[in-house]
Image 1 (spheres, rainbow, N blue to C red):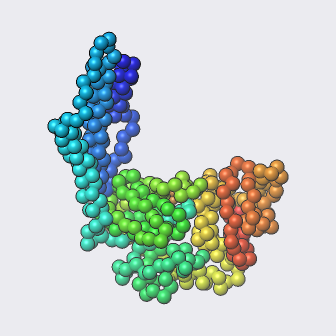
Image 2: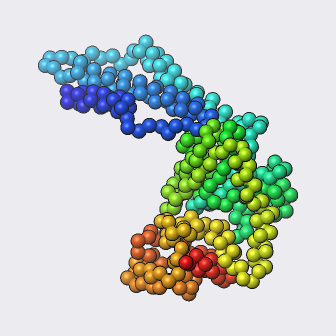
Length: 366
Ligand code: CUA
């Protein structure tokens, strides 16, 4: 009897919790209200099965409880009951699966007038690319990835020269314009997810996945990575800024094309003094900026702002003043530092690259 009462309390409690829950879904800001409907159908069907099955168990526990002299009837088969159970279960499962299949088919079939946005995930940051004036994205391949080409665009592909490359976790989109999103990863599994848009997709290394959505509200929406992709995973957050078309065009005009960014990098390398610029690019392409802020804000690793001259306490009990020699040694062969998780990988850098990176960190003082 105690189990029957406990089950009954669980059923009533679950239903009440669902109705009175303090947690609400974020307001929707895209065309995908179908996602919410599909979820609601799932919750309702599962909820009905949950309540009916548990109440049935409560009833049988009470109705057939142990009584002196009572005997159970032996009934190994009941075809009528089996047909009913198979029928109801089939209807339930079809109702659970079918709406999802219909919505998913729509989700991966963008309308013809959709603009294209490429999202590239890397431990632990986001980058974005738009096709340039020709409306076509250039080809890309992991073997083209370099400090001045972190997205690995094919330098020989004409279609890629005018592509607009956005380094950093923030991207802008025009309101009410369908967007076809193409996703690539440089390393592990990631998942680009914007809760307000009800839109997300896994990003699998070696393949391009895609979905589409239409942002319907102007505003700033947080994007995040929804696949555990390593210790910096919670750091993989970004911002999608949805604007009126004019604001979006103005933002887009401020971005650089692939050709411009490569030319700027070449110029930088040509100037003997411009180690700092090269170091900044390396910090981007090697993913350093995912864990080290440059504005003093807290992150996975120590901020680079005013890092030179600071005293760091190492886990082995020693401490050291951060100077150029310490930085160069540390970047090649990191040691755990007190107060930070021991997750810094050994960086494979040439002597030139190391000098550039140190020069960049040094430039962030004062
Ligand atoms: Cu990328 Cu989690």
